[in-house]
Amino acid sequence: MENKQDYDDEFIVNLTIDGSPYEEVEVKVTDPQKTIRDQIASIVAVFELPKLDNGGNPIQYLLGQFMDDGEDKILEFEDVDGREQALIDYNIQPGDHLHLISVPIAG
Image 1: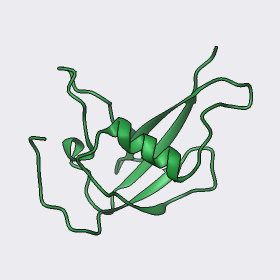
Image 2: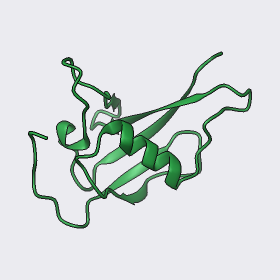
Image 3: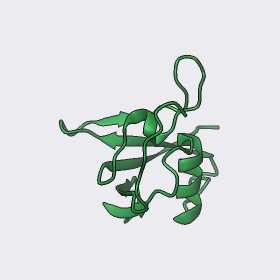
């Protein structure tokens, strides 16, 4: 990745998971260069989040960053050229607050 920076071994972000009891849990990011898509898959696996809603519809997860103005900025999977994005592409730093958002996909 182009924006490679040196990160210490304690790259910890605060994470809130939409629709769950997990609010501002500290999560260690093992590789900030891993794609947003892969980061989401890791979070879903670690927290054993459902892949289907109660109606049997698939759930898509998005990752957002809480901004100072109280809004969420959705971290897109790819840039305009189709290149996979990672946390470092959004300048996510240790201590930042991320938000995992669940979006049921109607069947």
